[in-house]
Image 1 (cartoon, rainbow, N blue to C red):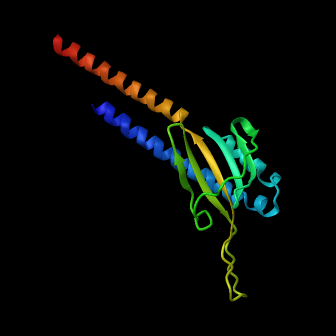
Image 2 (cartoon, one colour):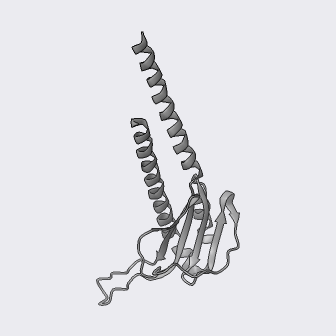
Length: 173
């Protein structure tokens, strides 16, 4: 029973860790996507996108304008994707932090807006507020995490069974 509880807690910790990793990845890519969205140049963000794709379990990366047009999109193994225009996620213009847009049995989908930096100048009366240029989406697969959780359950169950058999053998003598 304790091995099941330990395995369950470990699987929850792994899931939380993967979600934090996804949020950090999408946030980092959003910072690197500003120039590409401002200059309408996919070349300015391609290296950063391919760098994100090098992380384990990253299945897809998209950099989109606020109107839903894709600036650049890549799938697993660096395959360029031609994605149609979509409706931007609700409240994207007001959002500031990365969010888990969708979670299903196969993947997590993280999204964060790409915003210009707010300009605070001691020489101007009006501070310029940050503007939303677009958004970044990163899709993380759950396949390797699910396999790791299964391996953890099997290992903990095997260890518990081995100790139970050892305990039974010792008490029989």
